[in-house]
Image 1: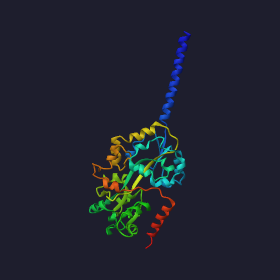
Image 2: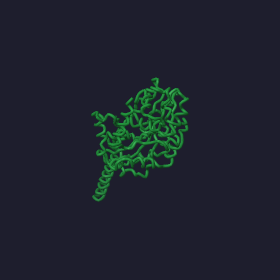
Image 3: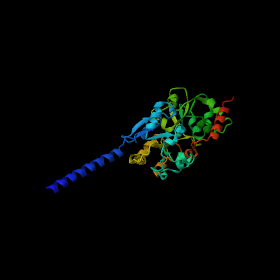
Image 4: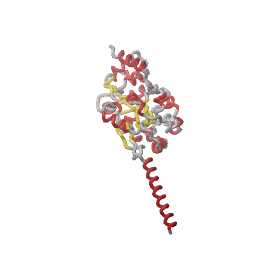
Length: 333
C-alpha cells in the first residue's frame, strides 16, 4: 500500500513539474513583446502579419526629442524603422541581429545596400522591406508618357508651383541629378508648391497641386478610390525607402523567427506587393514581384525602373557638408 501511495505521489509530483514546465514554456513563447514603429507609414498588410500577442508602440521617430517617444523606444523589445530616421537612434542600444536571422535569407540588393553601412551598424540591421517612391499625377493624363520615361517632365512650365516634393533635400538633390538640364536643382525648387511627407497625398487631392512624389505604400489605397489620380514610375529609376528590423533586447524567442518566415508565404507576399511593400528576400516568389506589374491595377515599377533605382547610403561628415553646400547654393538667385 505504501509503495502504491508513493508511486501515486511521485506521479502527481511529476505531473506538477510537467505542468509548471509547460506554463514556463508557453510564457516564454507567448511573452508580450513590444514592437515600436510609426504606424502611419506602414501598410495594413504588414501590420496584419504581427502576432496578436505583440504589443504595438506607435513611435514618431522624427520627434524622438519628445519624452513620450523616448519612453516608448526605451520600452520596445524591437523596432521597425526606415533608413531616413536611422541617424536619430543610438545603435549601442541594440543587439546584433545576425545571431537570429541568416543573411542567406536576403537578396543581393539588400546585401549590397547593407555593405554601405559601418560594420557596427549593419550587424544590427535586418532589411524587412523596400518601398519605391512613386509619381502621382492628378487630372493630367497627358503627363503620363513623359513621366514614365524621364524626370525632366517635372520642369514643365505648366507644373510651376504645383508639385509636392518630399521633405528631404537629399531626395530632391538625387532627382535633380537625373534631369538633363543645367541648374536642375534650382529649377526644381521653383516648381514646388510645398515640401511634405506624411500628408502629401491629402494636399494633392485637396489643393490645386498636380503632382506629388510619395512612397508607393502611402498612396496606393487612394488610387483605388480616386479616378483623378495616376501612378507613374520613371524608367530612369526612383528613390527607394528601406525599412529595417532592429532588436532592442536580447530576444531568443521563436515567435520573432516565425514572424519573419510567415512573410514568405505567397499570399502574404502578394498582399504586401499590392500595397507597395516589397520584401528584400531572395526566394523566387519575392523576386518575381520586382519584375511584374500589379495585375489588378497594372501599376508598379518596371524592371528597368528597379534596375535604375537608387538607395541612400549613410553619409559621412564630408558628404553631408557637400550636400548642404549644394542645397544652399541652389537658393542663390
